[in-house]
Length: 433
Ligand code: GUN
Ligand code: ZN
Image (cartoon, rainbow, N blue to C red; front, side, top):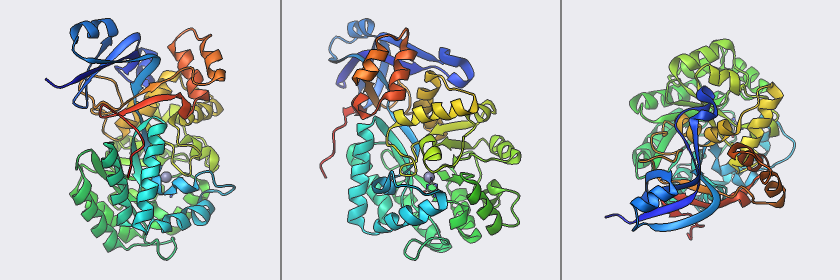
């Protein structure tokens, strides 16, 4: 029989969507347990019941820590790790001043490997077990992130960022090479172990219509792949798209016309949407990704979480490293809460943690495998210390229920709140490579 490990602590699992069902969609057990074997969750229940049923299991007692699914970060740029928190620019200047010069450096495969490894160790320390990342235009940067993920056993999604205009010399491919390189990488990595390849045109301004069409054709040949891009992040960007694509009805239309709109499409930011765009995204069942620390840091605007989830759109949550100002999904949940406040629609703690786990997993079409504590799910989970600093501990001591206690950690917590991260049942430690 497979070796079983029984993790004891408080447990938090979801049986539904708190945007539809409220906090009733969550189940909290203050004396719970998670049974893990062969990298999979076998059971979640009361500690006493599971201990009695599995007397041979090795027991790991996490005390009062809250066991929950590992965080799922649905939109990141791992190549921007070294330029996170760069001052004073808005989107287009920020790309030209900070991002493109740094992305150029990933032409060197050794540099790409170093950044990929450091990045994944950082996110694991912050309790994130899955990311969906843009690489750079260099195929070696895609190999680097998937190899680093494989070494750590992580479920990671990534793709080669394609750009054939409005980017500097050295950071441009062509319609043909974008198709060929993406196809070769897809064939090498898609569904190899825990890897998923994601077709990745950066955004309409940096692709010619020919390149968007070539990637639309590749997606049509591999419809089970996700396709990720950016949509309506800043008003200047939208005006630029309008000038580059004068025939398009709106920004989303630049993707739709070239075969880049579908249920496996992931559209990052989606802040300044026209009613037609929201209708089309809803009709096709596409997913949006909210990147709150990025939206405030780059000065983009306030995502309409309440309105878009009420329409039934799938929404994931993301740091958008390094446009976002933190690697922490706790900090990201806090920023999502603050943006909700500015819109007059505050999110409940159950909605915030759901977005960071199940919601993101659902946006990535992986909610049958990750993002929840439930039998049959992959054993990617964390132990959250709900009293990780003096400031949080004194607030949590007055909490009347788990949501009040968790909310203090969401608003004030950081990597010190992550007592441990488990990937496919194994405790994560910085990899030696
Ligand atoms: N739009 C196109 N590329 C990027 C990027 O790297 N970061 C952000 N935040 N927006 C983008
Ligand atoms: Zn982005």
